[in-house]
Length: 328
Image (cartoon, rainbow, N blue to C red):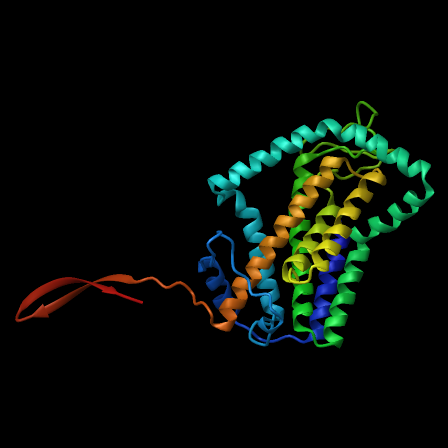
């Protein structure tokens, strides 16, 4: 996964040089993003203008703007636990309980999936091919989509693809931390002490090994599934008016997740957690960009507050203290 992230970063930089970069004042923009309140409709969801004409020169994602948003995305993702409301904690609890319940079927599903792959050459071939789209093939796919946007001068496709790389990188960073904290044994690897594959969580600093005795990383959450859903969610939200796009995007992401099970790389609950993480990251990245776009287009301004100051006047030989409130 680290190699994939490095390749994605390099590819993103190359895409910017292909598209051309524009100057921008990062300090001003990041302050506005930090102080900005979300614009919600009656359902409590942020209103995003995804019409093609909304992706123009005033809302273009510049080179410095890209990395400002990327940093903002990472900040929002890692500080989310400190900003969660009661509804968020409730949803997290529901998901945690559901995941805990699903761990009971991890081993049966793993055995069934491996038997299916071993006894069906077609499933085996398709699985090995599909699983690559959650890895390096995803980077190639994003590069191809960016090239299409450049060739046909499709600003919406170019911007959406850049957002997909942001979602890919942000989700990758979060899942890396998740893997470190969980310390879960992969289904294809033997436990260091029991010498058996078990869906157990050992926590950080636990030495995970593979079948050959080499050091391995944690199984939870699935990195390939996280990356697939992170990008799929961005395209699904930006092209929600195209009925086939969400179906294709989420359909491919789901197949990638299933392939991680048939390839015996992950437990079922690893894939579920990766899908949830990728989806939530994609939503956050899309919403953050549209707040950025509203700032760039002048639709909304930085929130300004009044100021209170103390002064002293001298009137007719008398010292007069006073308070002054300045409205903005």
